[in-house]
Length: 307
Image 1 (cartoon, rainbow, N blue to C red):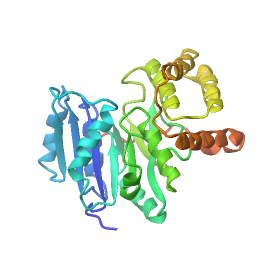
Image 2 (cartoon, one colour):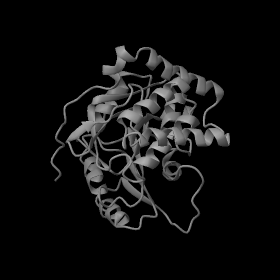
Image 3 (cartoon, one colour):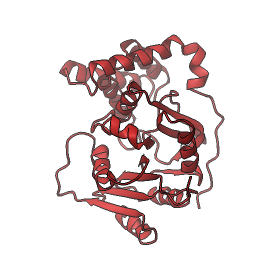
Image 4 (cartoon, rainbow, N blue to C red):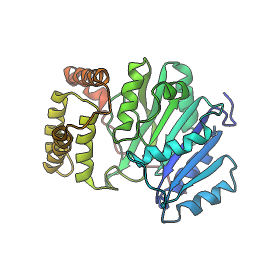
């Protein structure tokens, strides 16, 4: 493995991230193995985000900014994926082995990408991988719970061959579930590594609010064809433990029922929906046995000092 960044590229859709982007850029330029190219797609930011990117672009020639002007009509579907695709089009024919979708509200240790590359070298069938999120909700940095096969949407590290086989990301809410379903159906492994930490500087739900976030989760569950039994259990769990209590579960249910009543077309085929439903049902059947593995309890951690 070389140290000059010939193995992977980064693509980062950003919009109004002046508060966090410096920490992300400093994390990337400080990597033990830097990317061969980093395309940062600025989706018409109204703050200092473009100026910050340009200041680093002058120092690091492998950083490139692509600016999307707001006088251009926004395409339907997920603006994040649409912006990612604009960046990917610039480099898709390049000689790289891995592509990373990276959000600019993270920080991580210098060996983060080197360690991920090592995991992909060890397992040729690993198609999508990531570390885990740590978020601070006022009680210190704690891990965000994820099932073993799920990877963090804010930093998806993908083998190019896998990414090509699943036709990239679908431009809709739920893209970071659909990619895993399609990859697993094609024989690829998807997983996260608990020892690799990403400090998520902007907690999930902060941008659109917790009520809308819960409704969005319900909508995504419908669009990806998840198990109805699993969803019922999820609603009950969210009512009891969600944020906000009770209302979070009701909004989750609302988000699911609305597209169901509208008879919206799902993002997955019938075969993919069945595969995903079976995957979730398997988690239910082995819940008590797998609970500790899927949702490890980790003591609050102190994040690294911001420099």
